[in-house]
Image: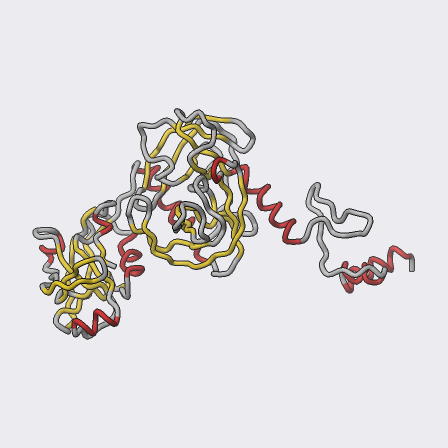
Length: 377
């Protein structure tokens, strides 16, 4: 047998590592080259790039051309207000509504190759902190999308943005949590957010949160901070929610959602015991808007005022336990059940009133930034 045949046989039967070990070279990992990334370098035979390095460099090269820098056209500093993500080759770019808030402002978009273009605001969804821009520049590289439904706490994620004007900065972290309820910069409450500890700072807003293969699972939206910079708690809007909003913006120029015109309180054991309720999960109706749709439907608010944290709530009202047959255990379920509804839709509410279950149909109003904050914590 020829030497090369013998070596090929070792590789086929036992793998690359066995071949190196047969030559007396200890190997912990095999690190394959990627384009111009060498397999190894140096006289001592040390590896220049680990397998993790190779994957990270690869995902940056794949995703970075789909990330843009966005600034008002009147801003001549070049530092940019935030990031955006190219969704289509013909110029649709998604970002946060707090990055591109107004159609009266002209925006300049800077691309990865250094070129720039003017962009117009197509529409916004301030309740989800999403804005859609359109540029006439064509032949753009659209980001690859991944399902955020399969996101697992603990998996590695990456963000690309322009923190403090340092363009196309890559940061890494993990998914710290899923299904978080977060208040946006417009004081709207957004459910089902992805939490990450990847370093997110001013200038990252609107940029992508990426999986290891360079596909996008969300749009970076906000940080929780005591200092104004990254404290390791950041949030991203799931990709599916982003695309749903974008489609409606393209179709109608805006996003409309249904809402119940009442002040709600998420039940817990303490409230349930204090109020003598027969259930400890659900949404307590503290108050209804007089003459509003919930009031007309016969939903009852409470009549006993008590201090609850920073708020005054009213006990004795109905408890919502399901909407259209979907069980409501807390705010996450409540926001999710109403998320895909429209103003004017009729929903079936399962209620507990004075310890007994009843069903009421109610017509939804339009959810706004103001009334989406009608919740007590």
